[in-house]
Amino acid sequence: MKLKLRLSRTTLIFGGTAVWGLFLLGCVTANRTMLVVPHVPGATLVGDKACKECHAEQVDKFANASHAKLAFADPKLGTTGCEACHGAGSLHVKAGGTTHTIVNPRKSPEACFECHLEKRGQFSLPYAHSVSNGNVSCSDCHDPHKGNALMGTGASLRTQTEGCAECHTTQKGPFIFKHNAMKEGCVACHNPHGSVNQKMLKAPDSNLCLQCHATGSAPGMLFASGRDHAGNPVQGTCWVSGCHEAVHGSNTSHALRF
Ligand code: HEC
Ligand code: HEC
Ligand code: HEC
Ligand code: HEC
Ligand code: HEC
Ligand code: HEC
Ligand code: HEC
Image 1: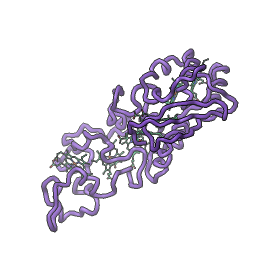
Image 2: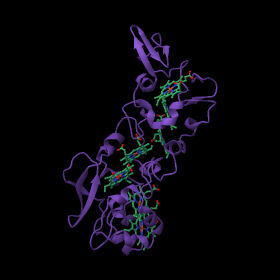
Image 3: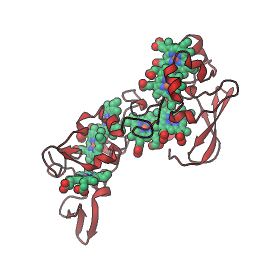
Image 4: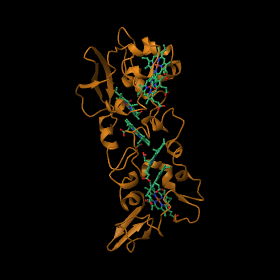
């Protein structure tokens, strides 16, 4: 979802009875869109206040969360932001809190896909983090409850690279010879949601590197970082063995070799 500052109206419907209004910032069109909150059979909306009694931590911090902006108050229930992801909570509250009466998106990303439709497609690409089987969860990379849902932005303290490195320790380094591309974050080269290219790369070939390193061309020549690479297999990858295979950083060579 590209976030543009344009207001559009979205209505959330639950079970054909309760109708929620909420404002969407951004989105593709300015038309009304209908979204269905995760379905919990037989339950009705109760509002965030009802959750606070038992989940004060989530409710108190939620005010500054990306998704808190979306929910606006229902005249009777107050804000209903929690139930946008967790489904209607009346049965869960009545039972004093049980697992089968509420949706936990850690177990399935479907709750997120309700609104982020295009993400379902990205995660279905041949190379993607496996969120559908719960191996990796949206919440490993996005905090739904507090601060900005994007790592390393706004009030979120964990940088994006630190977040990725919690699982991918070897790519983070430290390295004696750093690759300054890493300063741009892992997303300079990877699409973390999924890609048609192996290793979730943004491009399968030297174009991945030339997005930063192309320094011009002349007939029969191709410059990368000022050096003519025309004799090299530039149509292939720059990270083949013997060239720059240590793309994340190297401990042996400033030219990023192992
Ligand atoms: C943007 C979607 C979203 C919203 C909105 C949301 N949650 Fe969650 N919630 C999640 C996800 C994802 C998880 C799983 C967290 C994990 O993987 O650790 C979760 C987990 C939980 C849990 C289980 C305990 C835990 O941390 O694992 C509780 C309790 C909870 N949420 C309460 C709330 C309350 C209360 C609100 C409203 C203030 C709320 N949530 C709003 C997505 C959301
Ligand atoms: C009366 C106390 C109480 C209230 C009110 C309450 N919960 Fe819970 N909730 C619990 C308890 C206890 C658990 C742990 C259940 C377990 O692990 O067996 C829980 C678990 C959860 C989970 C995790 C479920 C899972 O499958 O892992 C979520 C999500 C959640 N609550 C969301 C909410 C939301 C949203 C609200 C408000 C609509 C809410 N709760 C209101 C007591 C409550
Ligand atoms: C009720 C609809 C809805 C649901 C459900 C929902 N989102 Fe969102 N989400 C949005 C909208 C709308 C935005 C754009 C917010 C804005 O412009 O500030 C957004 C923004 C985001 C962002 C970008 C935040 C930013 O500040 O740029 C992330 C990341 C995100 N959502 C992840 C998730 C995850 C993960 C889940 C499931 C746990 C989820 N969303 C569930 C509607 C939803
Ligand atoms: C919760 C742990 C976790 C986090 C956080 C995480 N990953 Fe992953 N990553 C995995 C797992 C597990 C796999 C293997 C594929 C799968 O099961 O999803 C993987 C696979 C990959 C692969 C493909 C590896 C291969 O050999 O094909 C790349 C590239 C990758 N992740 C990049 C990232 C980036 C970039 C981030 C941060 C935006 C990130 N990962 C955050 C767990 C994680
Ligand atoms: C491996 C880490 C990782 C996982 C898992 C992950 N995301 Fe993301 N997501 C990111 C990163 C990193 C960005 C920022 C992308 C950028 O800066 O180019 C992002 C951006 C977003 C955005 C805002 C920008 C956009 O692309 O629309 C949304 C919405 C979003 N993610 C939703 C989700 C949802 C929903 C899930 C689960 C189905 C999910 N993400 C799982 C790492 C992840
Ligand atoms: C300059 C581009 C670039 C950046 C930035 C980058 N990667 Fe990579 N990454 C690659 C390339 C190219 C490969 C494929 C290497 C191969 O196939 O031998 C790769 C492979 C991987 C793999 C698969 C295992 C491996 O080493 O082959 C993981 C996991 C990974 N990257 C994670 C990350 C993480 C986490 C970050 C951020 C800390 C990151 N990458 C930043 C280019 C990059
Ligand atoms: C996001 C931008 C970016 C991307 C993408 C990128 N690099 Fe870099 N790279 C840099 C920067 C910045 C430096 C340090 C300044 C310089 O030497 O140009 C650097 C330095 C290098 C160096 C060290 C040059 C020297 O003489 O010390 C090599 C080798 C290198 N990159 C190879 C690659 C390869 C291979 C890829 C593709 C997998 C790649 N880079 C992708 C930004 C990038």
